[in-house]
View (cartoon, rainbow, N blue to C red):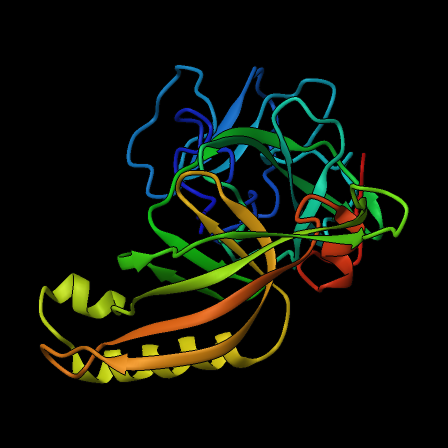
Length: 297
């Protein structure tokens, strides 16, 4: 899970909302000579120092060949939506994570990139959109870091970090051996099949129990139901962990065993099998793990 938001660009709050919060949509200046015009939420005193876009900035006009005063440039066209994209550092193609309607009254936007790999540096961008025309993006580099085992799809995620047992990962290939009557040694033919499979087990613990430092029985029940239903739904998922393993999988044979010390949380286990290339964009789109719209601009 990755929350795009505060201080993501080294202190410049690049991923905060556009200017039209607090009902400000424009400012009119007459009979003065100014270099910049800045309006901040809750401003209490007049200052003359030039500043940059901060978390409480509402409007910042630099008059640099434009009358725009937001932190996203759209050539003075009306912004209808915001596109959130990513790419691994050094790659060229942008992947669309999500597109949200633009709300003039909204100050912050939150987007979760559930498919991010641990210890990988990504470049994220927000692009204003008018109709289907994209404006200039604002960008920030973020390295994803997380703990434990994660099972995710485009809209759901389950973290297993207690008592995780990865078992044995089996590498499956198809090999046929033909024994000939006129030859001492057989003929061996190896096919193209090459995938991995295995069994995972671990204890499910809810976020509420962790935060409260005690068993929250209602939260454990809700989390258990959510996680097991998610595992059983038969849809493709990404299985990833903090040391870089990353597979496109399907899950079967889900089992639960009540935890013997409290009976509230459970140890869950399941079989998994790799079903495709986790790096192939067409495969991820077909599996509904990425939006059916990739924009490489």
